[in-house]
Length: 209
Image 1 (cartoon, rainbow, N blue to C red):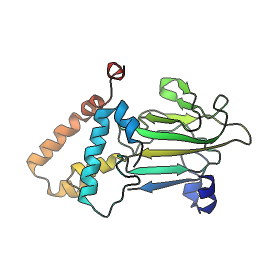
Image 2 (image 1 turned 90 degrees about the vertical axis):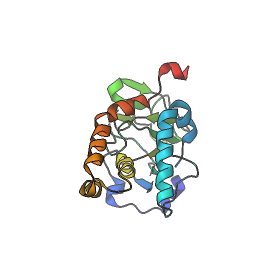
Image 3 (image 1 turned 135 degrees about the horizontal axis):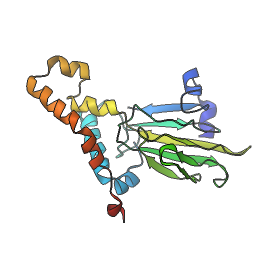
């Protein structure tokens, strides 16, 4: 990533953004499937099924990585990637985001992941990956020492993409313009139970033991 950063030209909104003061490049329309599938099999299957429908519907789309479920990713080029406390409101509300730490830094002295709502600070060495519900939990990472480097690679899926698929590959506006009374009733029913359906996709502690 350090070499790639030297070859990139970043727009002002890519060089400074709400996550932090470091250049970042987002790509995609996937990666990290095995850990996701292991720890949240129901949520993984939800992603898998929807992305399979999306890519089957539009053959011009290309997966970032073969056989993975996240359709989008961001390369945070650093070289000092220190994020502000933030959530990712555009992501699927109950979805998980994959965050991988890269670079050369002492993880006992910096680069920790902070989950503010939970009051948890996690040591996060280079090469580590964590899965977090990034649209729900405020998260950031701590500074590193002078002359150290830290990059990160994140993978995620926008909530709007799931809505587009559920609408029969149409925007909300296009769907509502032609929806029948039965379709509107079905849509409202799905909306009212969405939080329950999303919560049911989370793993239980007993399932992980």
